[in-house]
Image (cartoon, rainbow, N blue to C red; front, side, top):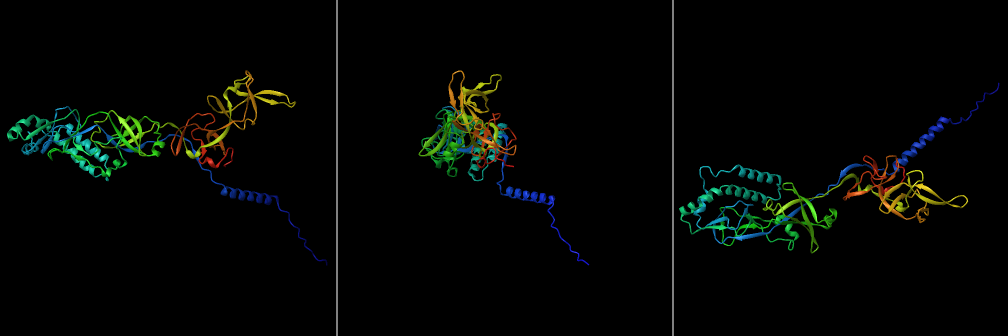
Length: 462
């Protein structure tokens, strides 16, 4: 009986196992490579504009004359603040005894001195302005509001008081001690002083813009005035200007160095206007001078005004600054352009040698990326450096080789980087606004590489 011997044969790997192993290896390699590759950040192009508006605190500079009282006693005003007066118009009275002032304080005639609808409207506007502009750090403005309201109420009865003033004075026996003072000139009357009346572009300092040190003194009816103390102020010219404090960055960022006029908006009431503009360099400090010939009376009681410089921002495709790169192109004189013999295609006449080393010419269509007055830009992939082109009518020759750079972005709609030309029409520190419908440009909703510095043309990114 023979022994049964089992012979084991090595099995050959099945094809399916080999294929599976290869696929698995490929997947592993792909995953590793993908994880090690830097992620591509893209940006979707959209229409937009730049907001370059900048807000500054301005100091109002006007032609202001302060007039002191020649008498001491109780003072009462008879012109509404912010109104025009002529020389000789009664501005205020001084009661050296106090008798007439006491009667004036309590003066009423059967309700005739009640506030008119115009007075009530002015009070409402003053309260609304205070509410909208309220700043907890400037509590002194509350006292200014109180003074403004008091002035409105007191001056609302001035017409009746003036019509009966002579009889009131006569009844008190104060004819010789009651002084009526007329305006010293023509202008807008103001009942406050702040020490800034003499400030101008010659003596302005950075410290003048510190509102924490600002102090306005309101001159009120019923107060006791001392001889030679300020009684009222006249603003005598419709032309005025404002000064703003600037830095070198402000001048550069908002393109102010070349401007002679700008558009501004008063934050207080959203009035927008154009004004003359110039830059003052005083001891290394920069100030902007904004010249106006209107709205003086509107802001006659304001020394500090918050204004916004309104830029004329352009609208176009908005892209981040980091998406811009440059690419090199051949430049060809525009005069060498011609059309094909049997077509309207634009191109150049190229010189070359045939197989017999004979010089021949041929028409080559060109893909133009940009055209200037004298030159065209063509891709370096379309020509070999040293290629000669000619003008058939003049026999002149140009050797292609000179290059210039064009700004552009990398569009990645197809999965690899394609350089597209851009024309910048506006910019700030973060974004460019680029022109639409540019040859070899981009369109709205295209996806572009966000950080162009890390990529090159025709690079696979997906």
